[in-house]
Length: 183
Image 1 (cartoon, rainbow, N blue to C red):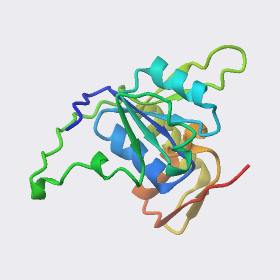
Image 2: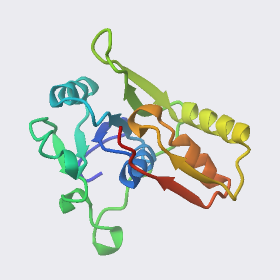
Image 3: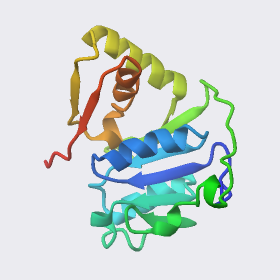
Image 4: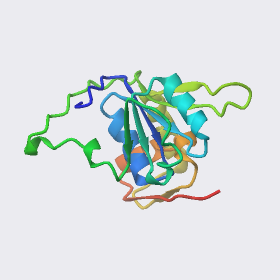
């Protein structure tokens, strides 16, 4: 809100599988903004193309990728875990109260970019409803219970498996394990 981002504005993130990436999915889309998880294996010129093409105003970068992506421009650019100024003061300390967002299941929650093997990568818009239906269907198929532990090993920038932890949490599953898997 303090950056002046409105509903539907795009926030790009280049991150390995991590708690901060999972948090970004919920933190960005939960307030009506659109998250663009970008493949951390892409070259800087490819990341630049996606940021520009998508119209992302904010670029969040893992600290391990800071040097590699230093020349990728964005209106607002932050290194996760390093740039303290990316966090607004809480309302209890004089910060603004977050603007409420009226949830809309047909609104775009995130945009995933294709690999671009035959042409330039294209953005695929995924709605809140897309995510919910996928997550519920998967949870029902997997017969999830409150005793399950889930290890997410697929690249979150691509597979968008974040719907599963969302529904799993809603079902009472107590532990979600997120690990960076090299390869």
